[in-house]
Length: 395
Image (tube, rainbow, N blue to C red; front, top):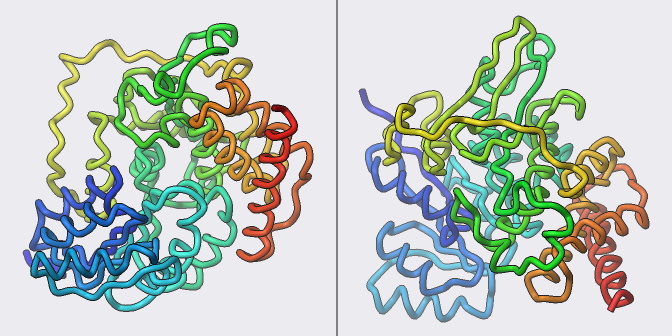
């Protein structure tokens, strides 16, 4: 059976999601070609990927590094177009260089390119939490305009997607009672607030099950990552806040579940490896080999589940609060959290201070209606400024 070759733009190609995506692509040269590779500033790693994958276009977001990328590619004998800057990434996903976009740029920086991919009808593999947390309503509008597919590659949302009939249906009409997101609990599961007072960035970044970047590792340790995923699930699946539950599942083998009104609970299980979700999303509705070891349930530790401790891990409670508040409250939450995590990683804020800072910013900036990207970006800036001011005043 022949397949049309999918042309894939990998945004955030030098990160962990980008690496996993390119690993899957390399296993299936008859199905996929990486036509656009984009990175933020790791010019050496991007040049190496270009040598291996020979894209049509390489984009470095930092314009000061464009000449260095050109030099490295010329020295390696790689012939491909080179561009730089934030707008170049957005333009690359808007044209006909690709029909599939893996949106794995970390943080608010990924918003414009994600929206552009949706508007132009691409198959959008969404790994950028912040774009849907900030601008979920705008992203759904863009998808409606473009008519493409949005397939989440966060392991939890991909699991829910797999457990629903036909991807993203009307939940009530499909007999869905609850979406149940699982959380590993991070490195500090079971600890009290007193035990968390003095934890270091290094401790927070030591995740028991996943290898991730420092920002998302800290978010996992505070459970803010799960809070952002709750907000994502609301937008992706049209789920009201009260229909979304979180269960702590330390083994990270059940990636999420869907509870139906007839008493059935469907769960998606697998070894903790992002290539499963990425391969599913790239090939959907087909299934392809992803390089992931089969799950040996007989050899697994017993699977356990417990309620999250919202009093100790307040970030998850704050995310539910922002979601219920509506408007751009989730964008304010996300911006304040990015500043707080940066401050914690820099040694300028204690671990428990992350939730305190986010709460202060949410209190100071009541939600406003989401109108457009420009207004959202302005509110994002306002929230960051408020967070930095509160930080300064606390010192």
